[in-house]
Image 1: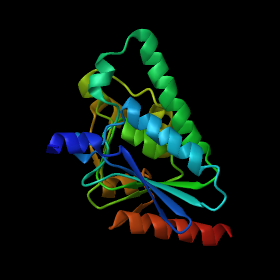
Image 2: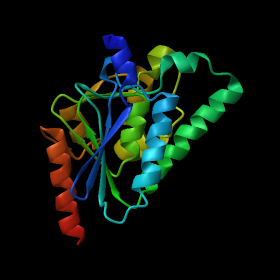
Image 3: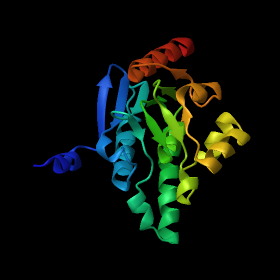
Image 4: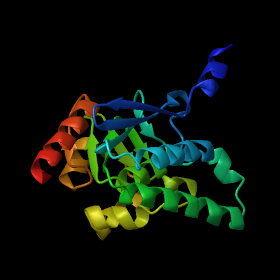
Length: 208
C-alpha cells in the first residue's frame, strides 16, 4: 500500500480518552483536515455516542500537525446545486448546533490553521484554546463563497460586528495573539491539548 492509500485508509477522526476528557482529533493532515461530508458524518456519530455518556465531562476537538481544520472540501462544494447546497449548509448547521448544545464542556484546541468551516466549528465550542502558531481566517472572499455553517452569526457575537465583517470581507488571517486580544480565543499555550485539559479542570473546579 502506497503513502496515498495509507492516508486515505486512516480514520478521518481519532477518538482518545484521558480520564473524563474525550479528545476528537482530525486525522487527515496531508489533506489539511477538510470537513468533508464523510468527516462530518464521522464527527456526528462520535457526538451521538459521547454526549450520552455521564462519565465524560469534556469533549476536546483538535487537529494534527499544523492544521486544526481547513473547512469544507472544495471539490465537494463544486458539485453542489442550489438544492444540495442548502442541504449541505443545514447539515453543518445542525451538527455545529449539537456541539454548541452538548451537555459536556466543549473545547476547540486549535493547534494550527483554523480556516473557513473549521473556524465555524471552533466557534460552536464553549471555549477556544490556541497554540502559539494558530491561524484563524474565513477565506471565502477569495473563493467567491461565504460560510453557511453559522459562523456569520457566532463570530459577530464573539468579536463584534465590525471585526467579524473585516475577517469575512477581506479573508484576513488572524494570529493567536490577535485572536486572544479580540476575544476569539480564551487562552494560548503549548502543548495546546494540555492547555485545553488544564482549562477544563479549572472551569470544573470553579463551577463545582
